[in-house]
Length: 219
Ligand SMILES: [Zn+2]
Ligand SMILES: [Zn+2]
Image (cartoon, rainbow, N blue to C red; front, side):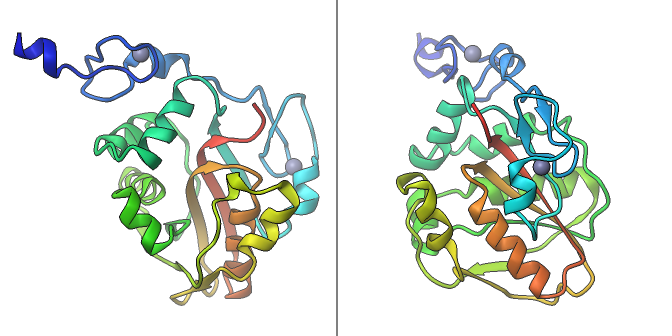
């Protein structure tokens, strides 16, 4: 009777999850990857592409990799960890990036969440993901960027407002001269935030800034 009440329900299919995570193994298996990636910048594409629109608009960021399409169980999952305060979120993130390949970097870091937002969320998925990827690869995790002011949630804004929203919203809190950095975010909407972070890092002397996100891009 008690086990009936306390079993973990999968946020994807609604059935019992046996792996101790809020997404069952079957639903993780079914998460969709993007069909193609731009050869130059790595941004997801629906067709094979040597260059894409993102290459032109994202000039500071080097390469980007977005693991899953923003659909199915991952949509629910991002909502859960961002807004429903599920403490198991970070553990699931780990499972989801277990097989992701990571190149050569000096530091792995994350897109910072605003302090007040962090309090509301209780956990910060981008940081959890970054720390896990650092553990997986023996690359050092470090906090590099801090938010200098509050910003509105990007998803609430129109596309052309998003760049302005994050402009000068970050500062670099440590010496990054000559460093190759992998910047982690949980979800990428237009890429404006990670591009602004990349701009700050490059202007502070970073030699390379690649971005990894759990989900986002074209649906
Ligand atoms: Zn499921
Ligand atoms: Zn591209």
